[in-house]
Length: 200
Image (cartoon, rainbow, N blue to C red; front, side):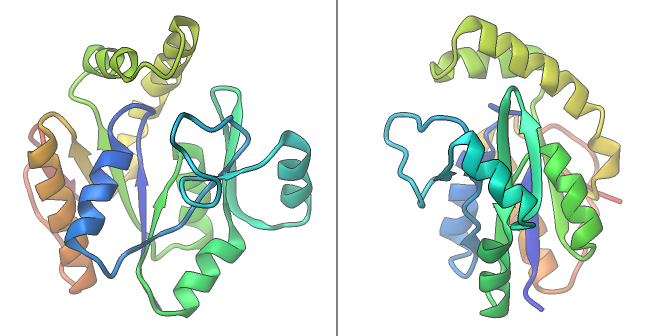
């Protein structure tokens, strides 16, 4: 069975940037493209960055049981299509899921062998700075995402691996080490420090 890696954490914490770096280092990894009801951001492509669905189509697929996991986040819906995940796993490719914390919990139940990694910011203030600097959300949306993030950060003890994204390069090194160890059947044992992975 191919390994499934779940990468989760608050919006704006840098999950996408870390995953891109990870996949450059581990080219055997394949990214499962999530579905969402949010509108595309500039430069995003349907079927590449996300499967962009309207609310009616998303709910139709939920009712049809087409999602491995799905969750609402800051007023939008996100989910992993069963066809996306199962097709890649059947082909023997290790798969990366970039999903919300609610979705990660669902995957934990349906795919208990999945390797779950929580990406955390060094602080909520640092996350606020990143969200504002990203320039993709208005101030009201930033505050809404921060409220959700504060709740999500309390979920860290649920995850076997936690990487604090303080310095991007350090965080990427730690995430890469977690994935390499899991692919090779080893576990990591690192102290909890900014930019370091922790394993239970």
